[in-house]
Amino acid sequence: MAKLEMKTPLVEMDGDEMTRIIWKMIKDELLLPFIDLKTEYYDLGLVHRNETNDQVTKDASEATKKYKVAVKCATITPNAARVKEYDLKEMYKSPNGTIRAILDGTVFRAPIQVKGIDPVVKNWKKPITIARHAYGDVYKASEMKIPGAGKVELVYTAEDGSQESVLVHEFKGPGIVQGMHNLTDSIESFARSCFTFALDTKQDLWFASKDTISKKYDHTFKDIFQEIFDAEFKTKFEEAGITYFYTLIDDAVARVMKSEGGFIWACKNYDGDVMSDMLSSAFGSLAMMTSVLVSPHGYYEYEAAHGTVQRHYYKYLKGEETSTNPVATIFAWTGALRKRGEMDETPAICDFADKLEKATLDTIESGQMTGDLKLITTLPNAVKLNTEDFIKAIRKTLEASL
Ligand code: NAP
Ligand code: MG
Image (cartoon, rainbow, N blue to C red):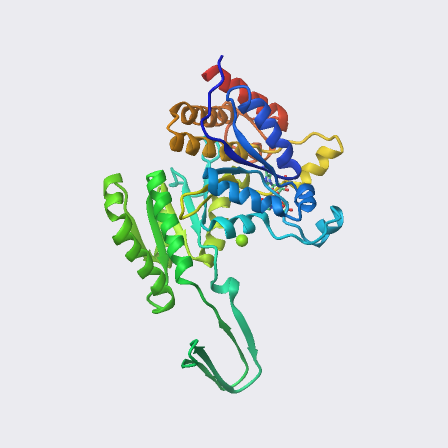
Protein backbone atom coordinates (compact mmCIF):
# COMPACT_ATOMS: atom_id res chain seq x y z
CA MET A 1 0.00 0.00 0.00
CA ALA A 2 1.29 3.48 -0.87
CA LYS A 3 2.02 5.71 2.10
CA LEU A 4 -0.12 8.80 2.65
CA GLU A 5 1.55 12.06 1.69
CA MET A 6 1.81 14.99 4.07
CA LYS A 7 2.08 18.56 2.79
CA THR A 8 3.41 20.51 5.78
CA PRO A 9 5.47 19.15 8.68
CA LEU A 10 4.24 18.85 12.25
CA VAL A 11 6.42 20.04 15.08
CA GLU A 12 7.36 16.90 17.00
CA MET A 13 8.48 17.33 20.61
CA ASP A 14 9.93 14.16 22.06
CA GLY A 15 9.96 13.64 25.82
CA ASP A 16 10.98 11.48 28.76
CA GLU A 17 10.84 8.08 30.46
CA MET A 18 8.04 5.61 29.67
CA THR A 19 6.22 7.99 27.40
CA ARG A 20 9.41 8.37 25.31
CA ILE A 21 9.46 4.58 24.88
CA ILE A 22 5.79 4.59 23.88
CA TRP A 23 6.39 7.54 21.53
CA LYS A 24 8.81 5.51 19.44
CA MET A 25 6.56 2.42 19.45
CA ILE A 26 3.61 4.51 18.22
CA LYS A 27 5.69 5.97 15.41
CA ASP A 28 7.17 2.62 14.38
CA GLU A 29 3.98 0.58 14.55
CA LEU A 30 1.11 2.96 13.90
CA LEU A 31 2.40 5.92 11.87
CA LEU A 32 5.54 5.30 9.79
CA PRO A 33 4.19 2.17 8.00
CA PHE A 34 1.17 4.18 6.78
CA ILE A 35 2.20 7.82 6.43
CA ASP A 36 5.14 9.52 4.82
CA LEU A 37 5.45 11.31 8.14
CA LYS A 38 6.87 14.83 7.90
CA THR A 39 7.94 16.31 11.22
CA GLU A 40 10.41 18.87 12.44
CA TYR A 41 11.89 17.00 15.39
CA TYR A 42 12.82 18.60 18.72
CA ASP A 43 14.15 16.48 21.54
CA LEU A 44 12.66 17.85 24.75
CA GLY A 45 13.96 14.89 26.74
CA LEU A 46 15.60 16.20 29.90
CA VAL A 47 19.11 15.15 28.82
CA HIS A 48 18.89 17.29 25.70
CA ARG A 49 17.16 20.17 27.46
CA ASN A 50 20.13 20.20 29.81
CA GLU A 51 22.64 20.07 26.94
CA THR A 52 20.98 23.07 25.29
CA ASN A 53 20.29 25.02 28.52
CA ASP A 54 16.61 24.52 27.66
CA GLN A 55 17.01 26.42 24.36
CA VAL A 56 15.41 23.43 22.58
CA THR A 57 12.09 24.09 24.35
CA LYS A 58 12.10 27.68 23.12
CA ASP A 59 13.10 26.62 19.60
CA ALA A 60 10.29 24.06 19.50
CA SER A 61 7.80 26.72 20.59
CA GLU A 62 9.02 29.12 17.89
CA ALA A 63 8.71 26.33 15.32
CA THR A 64 5.11 25.84 16.47
CA LYS A 65 4.44 29.46 15.55
CA LYS A 66 5.79 28.72 12.10
CA TYR A 67 4.00 25.41 11.41
CA LYS A 68 0.97 26.05 13.66
CA VAL A 69 0.57 22.40 14.78
CA ALA A 70 2.70 20.49 17.28
CA VAL A 71 2.54 17.15 19.04
CA LYS A 72 4.32 16.71 22.36
CA CYS A 73 5.39 13.74 24.44
CA ALA A 74 5.18 14.02 28.25
CA THR A 75 8.29 15.56 29.79
CA ILE A 76 9.85 15.70 33.23
CA THR A 77 9.41 18.92 35.17
CA PRO A 78 12.61 18.94 37.22
CA ASN A 79 12.52 19.06 41.01
CA ALA A 80 15.44 18.65 43.42
CA ALA A 81 15.49 14.86 42.96
CA ARG A 82 15.64 15.21 39.16
CA VAL A 83 18.47 17.74 39.36
CA LYS A 84 20.48 15.05 41.11
CA GLU A 85 19.28 12.14 38.98
CA TYR A 86 20.14 13.91 35.68
CA ASP A 87 23.01 16.02 37.01
CA LEU A 88 21.27 19.15 35.74
CA LYS A 89 22.94 22.54 35.35
CA GLU A 90 19.83 24.13 36.83
CA MET A 91 16.27 23.35 37.85
CA TYR A 92 14.67 24.14 34.49
CA LYS A 93 11.11 25.41 34.35
CA SER A 94 8.26 23.17 33.30
CA PRO A 95 8.43 22.79 29.47
CA ASN A 96 4.67 23.21 29.29
CA GLY A 97 4.98 26.50 31.15
CA THR A 98 7.72 27.70 28.76
CA ILE A 99 5.71 26.67 25.70
CA ARG A 100 2.57 28.35 27.01
CA ALA A 101 4.45 31.54 27.82
CA ILE A 102 5.64 31.71 24.19
CA LEU A 103 2.45 30.61 22.42
CA ASP A 104 -0.06 32.03 24.91
CA GLY A 105 -3.33 30.13 25.06
CA THR A 106 -5.50 27.75 26.97
CA VAL A 107 -5.27 24.04 27.69
CA PHE A 108 -8.34 21.95 26.85
CA ARG A 109 -8.59 18.50 28.38
CA ALA A 110 -11.07 15.90 27.22
CA PRO A 111 -11.66 12.27 28.21
CA ILE A 112 -11.54 9.56 25.56
CA GLN A 113 -14.68 7.53 25.99
CA VAL A 114 -14.87 3.86 25.14
CA LYS A 115 -17.43 1.10 25.71
CA GLY A 116 -16.62 -0.87 28.82
CA ILE A 117 -15.01 2.02 30.68
CA ASP A 118 -18.08 3.72 32.07
CA PRO A 119 -18.11 7.15 33.68
CA VAL A 120 -19.08 7.20 37.35
CA VAL A 121 -21.83 9.63 36.41
CA LYS A 122 -24.30 7.43 34.52
CA ASN A 123 -25.84 10.16 32.39
CA TRP A 124 -22.52 11.35 30.90
CA LYS A 125 -22.89 9.98 27.38
CA LYS A 126 -20.40 12.32 25.70
CA PRO A 127 -17.08 13.77 26.83
CA ILE A 128 -16.95 17.01 28.79
CA THR A 129 -13.97 19.13 27.74
CA ILE A 130 -12.56 21.36 30.41
CA ALA A 131 -10.66 24.60 29.76
CA ARG A 132 -8.73 26.11 32.63
CA HIS A 133 -7.58 29.71 32.65
CA ALA A 134 -3.90 29.36 33.44
CA TYR A 135 -3.03 32.78 34.83
CA GLY A 136 -3.46 34.63 38.09
CA ASP A 137 -6.10 34.64 40.83
CA VAL A 138 -5.12 32.66 43.91
CA TYR A 139 -2.06 31.20 42.10
CA LYS A 140 -0.40 34.61 41.99
CA ALA A 141 -1.82 36.02 45.21
CA SER A 142 -0.03 37.90 47.98
CA GLU A 143 -1.02 36.90 51.47
CA MET A 144 -0.47 38.13 54.97
CA LYS A 145 -1.18 36.96 58.48
CA ILE A 146 -2.73 39.74 60.50
CA PRO A 147 -1.37 39.54 64.05
CA GLY A 148 -4.00 41.66 65.77
CA ALA A 149 -6.39 44.59 65.61
CA GLY A 150 -5.81 47.06 62.76
CA LYS A 151 -6.95 48.17 59.34
CA VAL A 152 -6.19 46.49 55.98
CA GLU A 153 -6.62 48.46 52.75
CA LEU A 154 -5.99 47.80 49.06
CA VAL A 155 -4.09 50.73 47.54
CA TYR A 156 -3.55 51.33 43.82
CA THR A 157 -0.86 53.86 42.96
CA ALA A 158 -1.05 54.97 39.32
CA GLU A 159 2.09 55.86 37.35
CA ASP A 160 1.38 59.56 37.93
CA GLY A 161 1.37 58.95 41.68
CA SER A 162 -2.35 59.38 42.22
CA GLN A 163 -3.95 56.82 44.51
CA GLU A 164 -7.20 54.97 44.97
CA SER A 165 -7.92 52.75 47.92
CA VAL A 166 -10.57 50.46 49.32
CA LEU A 167 -10.99 49.11 52.83
CA VAL A 168 -10.58 45.34 53.07
CA HIS A 169 -11.38 44.98 56.77
CA GLU A 170 -11.12 46.65 60.15
CA PHE A 171 -9.62 43.83 62.18
CA LYS A 172 -10.63 43.64 65.85
CA GLY A 173 -8.22 40.75 66.40
CA PRO A 174 -5.88 38.43 64.46
CA GLY A 175 -6.80 37.11 61.03
CA ILE A 176 -5.61 36.58 57.47
CA VAL A 177 -5.74 38.54 54.24
CA GLN A 178 -5.09 37.85 50.56
CA GLY A 179 -4.71 40.10 47.53
CA MET A 180 -5.06 38.64 44.04
CA HIS A 181 -5.16 39.94 40.51
CA ASN A 182 -5.74 39.13 36.90
CA LEU A 183 -5.03 40.87 33.59
CA THR A 184 -7.49 42.04 30.98
CA ASP A 185 -5.18 40.74 28.21
CA SER A 186 -5.01 37.31 29.74
CA ILE A 187 -8.76 37.02 30.25
CA GLU A 188 -9.35 38.19 26.67
CA SER A 189 -7.00 35.66 25.21
CA PHE A 190 -8.57 32.93 27.40
CA ALA A 191 -12.00 33.88 26.08
CA ARG A 192 -10.81 33.92 22.44
CA SER A 193 -9.16 30.49 22.81
CA CYS A 194 -12.37 29.07 24.27
CA PHE A 195 -14.63 30.49 21.56
CA THR A 196 -12.18 29.37 18.85
CA PHE A 197 -11.98 25.82 20.21
CA ALA A 198 -15.78 25.61 20.55
CA LEU A 199 -16.08 26.50 16.86
CA ASP A 200 -13.30 24.06 15.92
CA THR A 201 -14.96 21.17 17.69
CA LYS A 202 -18.59 22.30 17.13
CA GLN A 203 -19.45 22.07 20.81
CA ASP A 204 -21.38 24.48 23.04
CA LEU A 205 -19.29 26.58 25.41
CA TRP A 206 -20.15 27.08 29.08
CA PHE A 207 -18.47 29.61 31.30
CA ALA A 208 -19.16 30.25 34.97
CA SER A 209 -17.92 32.50 37.74
CA LYS A 210 -19.31 34.02 40.94
CA ASP A 211 -20.25 37.45 39.59
CA THR A 212 -23.17 37.89 42.01
CA ILE A 213 -20.76 37.94 44.95
CA SER A 214 -17.64 39.26 43.23
CA LYS A 215 -19.19 42.24 41.48
CA LYS A 216 -15.95 43.71 40.09
CA TYR A 217 -13.49 40.79 39.88
CA ASP A 218 -15.60 37.89 38.63
CA HIS A 219 -18.00 40.23 36.90
CA THR A 220 -15.13 41.46 34.72
CA PHE A 221 -14.55 37.88 33.52
CA LYS A 222 -18.24 37.60 32.66
CA ASP A 223 -18.25 40.96 30.85
CA ILE A 224 -15.11 40.25 28.83
CA PHE A 225 -16.46 36.90 27.66
CA GLN A 226 -19.77 38.49 26.65
CA GLU A 227 -18.15 41.44 24.84
CA ILE A 228 -15.80 39.23 22.83
CA PHE A 229 -18.60 36.82 22.05
CA ASP A 230 -20.93 39.55 20.79
CA ALA A 231 -18.26 41.34 18.76
CA GLU A 232 -16.35 38.42 17.22
CA PHE A 233 -18.13 35.09 17.57
CA LYS A 234 -21.91 35.42 17.79
CA THR A 235 -22.59 35.05 14.07
CA LYS A 236 -20.07 32.23 13.68
CA PHE A 237 -21.69 30.35 16.57
CA GLU A 238 -25.13 30.76 15.01
CA GLU A 239 -23.82 29.45 11.68
CA ALA A 240 -22.23 26.46 13.43
CA GLY A 241 -25.41 25.79 15.42
CA ILE A 242 -23.67 26.04 18.80
CA THR A 243 -24.32 28.27 21.82
CA TYR A 244 -22.44 30.21 24.46
CA PHE A 245 -23.93 29.82 27.92
CA TYR A 246 -22.97 31.75 31.05
CA THR A 247 -24.12 30.81 34.53
CA LEU A 248 -22.98 30.94 38.16
CA ILE A 249 -20.30 28.43 39.11
CA ASP A 250 -22.46 26.54 41.62
CA ASP A 251 -25.28 26.32 39.11
CA ALA A 252 -22.79 25.11 36.48
CA VAL A 253 -21.61 22.31 38.76
CA ALA A 254 -25.18 21.16 39.37
CA ARG A 255 -25.98 21.25 35.64
CA VAL A 256 -22.77 19.43 34.67
CA MET A 257 -23.68 16.52 36.96
CA LYS A 258 -27.11 16.20 35.33
CA SER A 259 -25.95 16.79 31.75
CA GLU A 260 -25.18 14.19 29.13
CA GLY A 261 -21.89 15.90 28.26
CA GLY A 262 -20.73 17.00 24.83
CA PHE A 263 -19.72 20.58 25.64
CA ILE A 264 -16.73 22.67 26.68
CA TRP A 265 -16.62 23.97 30.23
CA ALA A 266 -14.41 27.05 30.62
CA CYS A 267 -13.25 27.59 34.20
CA LYS A 268 -11.37 30.24 36.09
CA ASN A 269 -7.97 29.09 37.32
CA TYR A 270 -8.97 27.60 40.68
CA ASP A 271 -12.27 26.15 39.46
CA GLY A 272 -10.38 24.51 36.61
CA ASP A 273 -7.79 23.02 38.95
CA VAL A 274 -10.48 21.39 41.08
CA MET A 275 -12.99 20.47 38.39
CA SER A 276 -10.48 18.93 35.97
CA ASP A 277 -9.44 16.34 38.57
CA MET A 278 -13.08 15.66 39.37
CA LEU A 279 -13.90 15.12 35.69
CA SER A 280 -10.87 12.99 34.86
CA SER A 281 -11.39 10.63 37.77
CA ALA A 282 -15.15 10.44 37.18
CA PHE A 283 -14.59 9.61 33.49
CA GLY A 284 -12.29 6.72 34.32
CA SER A 285 -8.56 7.19 33.97
CA LEU A 286 -5.88 9.85 33.60
CA ALA A 287 -4.38 7.65 30.92
CA MET A 288 -7.49 8.30 28.80
CA MET A 289 -7.33 12.09 28.95
CA THR A 290 -6.15 14.21 26.04
CA SER A 291 -4.87 17.72 26.25
CA VAL A 292 -4.46 20.46 23.66
CA LEU A 293 -3.04 23.93 24.00
CA VAL A 294 -5.02 26.31 21.77
CA SER A 295 -3.47 29.71 21.30
CA PRO A 296 -5.61 32.73 20.39
CA HIS A 297 -3.24 33.21 17.42
CA GLY A 298 -4.28 29.88 15.91
CA TYR A 299 -1.47 27.55 17.08
CA TYR A 300 -2.25 24.07 18.41
CA GLU A 301 -0.11 21.80 20.57
CA TYR A 302 -1.47 18.30 21.31
CA GLU A 303 -0.38 15.98 24.12
CA ALA A 304 -1.55 13.44 26.68
CA ALA A 305 -2.73 14.82 30.01
CA HIS A 306 -0.65 12.37 32.05
CA GLY A 307 3.05 12.55 32.91
CA THR A 308 6.02 10.38 31.97
CA VAL A 309 4.79 7.37 34.01
CA GLN A 310 8.08 7.16 35.89
CA ARG A 311 7.22 4.09 37.97
CA HIS A 312 6.61 2.01 34.83
CA TYR A 313 9.83 3.31 33.28
CA TYR A 314 11.95 2.06 36.17
CA LYS A 315 10.34 -1.37 35.75
CA TYR A 316 11.04 -1.20 32.01
CA LEU A 317 14.71 -0.35 32.70
CA LYS A 318 14.98 -3.43 34.92
CA GLY A 319 13.66 -5.53 32.04
CA GLU A 320 10.34 -6.18 33.74
CA GLU A 321 7.12 -6.28 31.76
CA THR A 322 5.06 -3.07 31.66
CA SER A 323 1.47 -2.45 30.71
CA THR A 324 1.43 1.29 30.10
CA ASN A 325 -1.57 2.81 28.38
CA PRO A 326 -0.58 4.61 25.13
CA VAL A 327 -4.10 5.77 24.22
CA ALA A 328 -3.80 9.44 25.20
CA THR A 329 -0.45 9.68 23.39
CA ILE A 330 -1.94 8.05 20.27
CA PHE A 331 -4.78 10.58 20.41
CA ALA A 332 -2.27 13.42 20.71
CA TRP A 333 -0.83 12.25 17.37
CA THR A 334 -4.25 11.81 15.75
CA GLY A 335 -5.38 15.22 17.03
CA ALA A 336 -2.31 16.86 15.53
CA LEU A 337 -2.57 14.92 12.25
CA ARG A 338 -6.25 15.79 11.88
CA LYS A 339 -5.56 19.47 12.50
CA ARG A 340 -2.65 19.32 10.02
CA GLY A 341 -4.97 17.72 7.47
CA GLU A 342 -7.61 20.40 8.02
CA MET A 343 -5.10 23.22 7.61
CA ASP A 344 -3.42 21.61 4.59
CA GLU A 345 -6.73 20.50 3.06
CA THR A 346 -5.51 16.92 2.86
CA PRO A 347 -8.62 14.93 3.83
CA ALA A 348 -6.77 11.61 3.55
CA ILE A 349 -4.67 12.59 6.58
CA CYS A 350 -7.83 13.44 8.57
CA ASP A 351 -9.36 10.16 7.48
CA PHE A 352 -6.29 8.24 8.68
CA ALA A 353 -6.50 9.99 12.07
CA ASP A 354 -10.15 8.94 12.38
CA LYS A 355 -9.30 5.34 11.47
CA LEU A 356 -6.42 5.12 13.93
CA GLU A 357 -8.65 6.42 16.73
CA LYS A 358 -11.37 3.97 15.81
CA ALA A 359 -8.88 1.09 15.65
CA THR A 360 -7.62 2.04 19.12
CA LEU A 361 -11.12 2.09 20.61
CA ASP A 362 -12.21 -1.06 18.74
CA THR A 363 -9.19 -2.90 20.11
CA ILE A 364 -10.19 -2.01 23.66
CA GLU A 365 -13.83 -2.86 23.01
CA SER A 366 -12.74 -6.27 21.72
CA GLY A 367 -11.36 -6.90 25.21
CA GLN A 368 -7.65 -6.22 24.61
CA MET A 369 -6.36 -3.48 26.92
CA THR A 370 -3.63 -2.34 29.29
CA GLY A 371 -3.64 -3.08 33.01
CA ASP A 372 -5.04 0.27 34.16
CA LEU A 373 -8.18 -0.29 32.05
CA LYS A 374 -8.48 -3.99 32.89
CA LEU A 375 -8.89 -2.93 36.54
CA ILE A 376 -11.93 -0.75 35.84
CA THR A 377 -13.59 -2.27 32.78
CA THR A 378 -17.07 -3.73 32.80
CA LEU A 379 -16.27 -5.93 29.78
CA PRO A 380 -16.46 -9.60 30.77
CA ASN A 381 -13.81 -10.85 28.31
CA ALA A 382 -11.02 -8.36 29.07
CA VAL A 383 -7.40 -9.45 28.66
CA LYS A 384 -4.43 -7.46 29.97
CA LEU A 385 -1.72 -6.93 27.36
CA ASN A 386 1.77 -5.53 27.84
CA THR A 387 2.66 -2.14 26.36
CA GLU A 388 4.09 -3.46 23.11
CA ASP A 389 1.50 -6.16 22.49
CA PHE A 390 -1.31 -3.67 22.98
CA ILE A 391 0.19 -1.33 20.37
CA LYS A 392 0.66 -4.30 18.02
CA ALA A 393 -2.97 -5.31 18.58
CA ILE A 394 -4.04 -1.80 17.54
CA ARG A 395 -1.91 -2.10 14.42
CA LYS A 396 -3.68 -5.34 13.49
CA THR A 397 -7.11 -3.71 13.92
CA LEU A 398 -5.93 -0.69 11.92
CA GLU A 399 -4.55 -2.77 9.06
CA ALA A 400 -7.84 -4.65 8.80
CA SER A 401 -9.69 -1.33 8.50
CA LEU A 402 -7.51 0.21 5.76
P1 NAP B 1 2.18 10.34 35.84
O1 NAP B 1 3.33 10.13 34.95
O2 NAP B 1 0.94 10.87 35.19
O3 NAP B 1 1.85 8.96 36.55
C1 NAP B 1 1.20 8.80 37.79
C2 NAP B 1 0.59 7.41 37.90
O4 NAP B 1 -0.61 7.38 37.14
C3 NAP B 1 1.45 6.31 37.31
O5 NAP B 1 2.41 5.85 38.21
C4 NAP B 1 0.41 5.29 36.93
O6 NAP B 1 -0.08 4.60 38.08
C5 NAP B 1 -0.72 6.16 36.44
N1 NAP B 1 -0.60 6.46 34.99
C6 NAP B 1 -0.41 7.68 34.41
N2 NAP B 1 -0.37 7.56 33.08
C7 NAP B 1 -0.54 6.25 32.81
C8 NAP B 1 -0.56 5.50 31.60
N3 NAP B 1 -0.42 6.09 30.40
N4 NAP B 1 -0.74 4.16 31.67
C9 NAP B 1 -0.90 3.55 32.86
N5 NAP B 1 -0.87 4.21 34.05
C10 NAP B 1 -0.69 5.54 34.01
O7 NAP B 1 2.54 11.34 37.01
P2 NAP B 1 3.84 11.41 37.98
O8 NAP B 1 4.35 10.05 38.21
O9 NAP B 1 3.39 12.24 39.09
O10 NAP B 1 4.89 12.22 37.17
C11 NAP B 1 5.98 11.65 36.47
C12 NAP B 1 6.70 12.75 35.71
O11 NAP B 1 5.84 13.31 34.75
C13 NAP B 1 7.15 13.90 36.59
O12 NAP B 1 8.53 14.14 36.40
C14 NAP B 1 6.32 15.08 36.15
O13 NAP B 1 7.08 16.26 36.15
C15 NAP B 1 5.96 14.72 34.74
N6 NAP B 1 4.67 15.27 34.26
C16 NAP B 1 4.65 15.74 33.00
C17 NAP B 1 3.47 16.21 32.43
C18 NAP B 1 3.50 16.71 31.02
O14 NAP B 1 4.51 16.65 30.36
N7 NAP B 1 2.41 17.21 30.53
C19 NAP B 1 2.28 16.16 33.17
C20 NAP B 1 2.32 15.65 34.47
C21 NAP B 1 3.52 15.18 35.00
P3 NAP B 1 0.54 3.20 38.61
O15 NAP B 1 1.97 3.47 38.88
O16 NAP B 1 -0.28 2.95 39.82
O17 NAP B 1 0.36 2.18 37.52
MG1 MG C 1 -4.43 20.22 40.38
